[in-house]
Every structure is written in C-alpha cells, then in structure tokens.
Length: 210
Ligand code: PRP
Figure 1 (cartoon, rainbow, N blue to C red):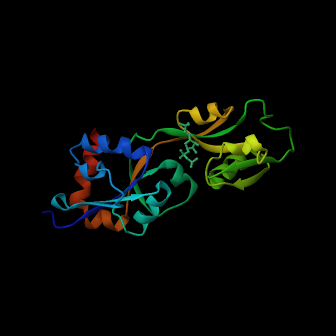
Figure 2 (figure 1 turned 120 degrees about the vertical axis):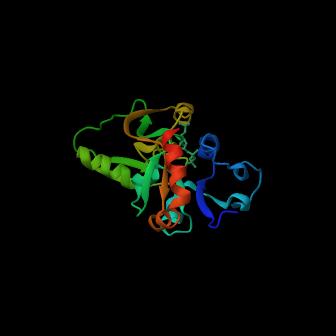
Figure 3 (figure 1 turned 45 degrees about the vertical axis):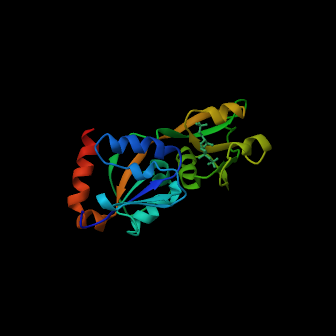
C-alpha cells in the first residue's frame, strides 16, 4: 500500500462526469467516484487515494488550506477570487464561457451615461469587465437561477456561465458579449506538491501528455 494518502478535491455535478474518463484514460483509477452514494469522502485505501466531493466553489479553499493536496476547479471560480495555489494544468474539460446575457432586445451597450444593472454570481469578474469598458454598473449579487433577473426586472443584464446556451434559450435570453473562456484546471497545494511530489509529478505528466 502506498505510504501517503493523496487527497483530491473534486466538484460534484456536471464536471465530475467528464473528470472520471479524463483521469481513467491516464490510468488513474477513480472507480470510487462512480459509486452511487451520498458519501462525501471516497476512500480507495488500496491505492492510497482519498477523494473529497465538494461544491465546485469550495474546491480551491480545501486545497489552499491543505485539506486536499489536489483539486479540480473551474477557471471561473479562480477568476472570481484569488487563492494561493499552484495551477499547473488545464484539464480541457468543463468547457463553457462567462458572458453578458440579457433579453435579445435590450439596449446593449446602454446609452452613454446610463448605469447598467447587472445580476451575477461573479461580481468581481463582472466589475472588472465593465470597469475596463468604462461602463457604470450597479452590481446585484444572486446565488443561482441568474437568468430570472432580466425576466423579472431585477436587472438589465446578467453575467453568468453559458455552456450549451440552453438555459438562456429556454428563458428567451441571448448572449450579448463574451467575457472569458472557461475550463477546469488542476490545482495543487504548494506544500503538498513538495511533500508528495513522487505521487503527484507522474500524474501531472500523464495528464499533460494525454
Ligand atoms: C449554470 C449557469 C447557467 C447554466 C448554463 O447553472 O449558471 O444557469 O448552468 O448552462 P447551459 O448553457 O448549458 O444551459 P447551474 O446549472 O450550475 O445552476 P445554478 O443556476 O444553481 O447556478
């Protein structure tokens, strides 16, 4: 049995489905992740592996504080908040984009001098985007179902993740402007990377080459 357990924080949900084959193609057996269970810690003692199943936004926090050695996190999360992490590898999965969206007939860009009301889960990304354009904004923070904001008059536009575009379409909204391409990144705790280099380095190399 390997001496040290490697702890990997992974996001629950859509990205996990793409992550399992991505890991398995490089011979990183993650069978414990595919079991139907509500367990949040998935232990593979034989391989010295432990997976933590987290809300995507919490992955970098667990890795930064060393509760996990490695993590898989969307670039959107890293753009929104700064973490002290090593991010050696883009995994090329979980592809989507951050975009400004709204009703297709909304005045966008708005007339000069008008303050744009923006609803978003990404206030820092959105603020930077509109600041760079010199567009005055009123930022309204919401947690989810962001597409409701322009439909109800809460905001003029939203800044949100667009993957297939289906949520926008079904709610009568359209992309008005792209902000950033997003995909999932492998992140590592800086200390863990040194202490467990023998376990982490071959994995990074295999993922890079695949
Ligand atoms: C995300 C995002 C959009 C949707 C986009 O929401 O906020 O609502 O996915 O995907 P699509 O372009 O493929 O339709 P998520 O499902 O994470 O739920 P949330 O509303 O709770 O954030």
